[in-house]
Length: 260
Ligand code: NAD
Ligand code: 0WE
Image 1 (cartoon, rainbow, N blue to C red):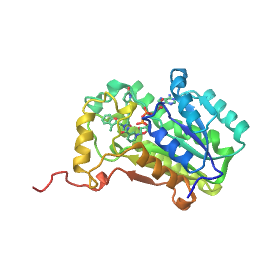
Image 2: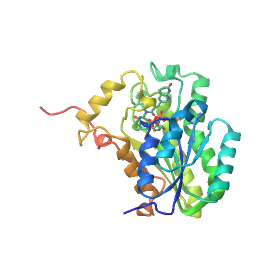
Image 3: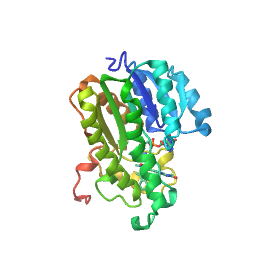
């Protein structure tokens, strides 16, 4: 069953074959969607172009989401190429590395602004830029993490940013609902992507996660891709403003002590 036949999807946040955006792109392609891919900057072009080609995607455009002009430019090009768009995926998050260790209270003003700009505001900016070309029955999707709800050591300003991103999902769902466009987030368990590489303590928490989670398995980019297809298809027709956990059930745990 091809769930996205006839739909056009714009994907933001593809860096390499480990990216969550890549898991979503592959799943969308398998389900028959036409694709447009955007990446952060020139440095990634060499990596992203062959990935795009492998899913028959010839719309590959750079867009640094901290720059309004680049957002306007990619939206303009998408309109020229596709006319209308059904799906937009935002798989982008960034904070300065030194904000992701030590005490949260040491977050600098500039570090706070940067994390909020790239990880939160960009979703709203993309929603606004693409709003005029979104077809009824369309869907926006972003990626979040449980550190928005509960303290995840070292996640720090990103946890605060993800809380704001999840609130943005609800406000955007309210704004775009009358247009027939749904807005949701997937809260993924830890995955070893570029954005997780070199994060202090990641390896240990990744291992502990699989030990503790009800399903006792780590989450893959393919797992996220499957849930993304669901949320962006008509199967999820009345689901909006939601955060769907794709985390092997980790978030339902109250106490992480095991008996015996
Ligand atoms: P990734 O490094 O593959 O993707 C992050 C992307 O953000 C990269 O493609 C990067 O180029 C892009 N980006 C950063 N700054 C940008 C800018 N200024 N303009 C445009 N793009 C920019 O890592 P990922 O883990 O696939 O991350 C995707 C999303 O998933 C992020 O929002 C992340 O917070 C979220 N997430 C990740 C995990 C995990 O454990 N890996 C878990 C839950 C949620
Ligand atoms: O959202 C994320 C990734 C967030 C992230 C990671 C980096 C590392 C490299 C944002 N910006 C940067 N900037 C860099 O320079 N995740 C959910 C993965 C993640 O990141 C963590 C985690 C987990 C899980 C950081 C600290 C603690 C846990």
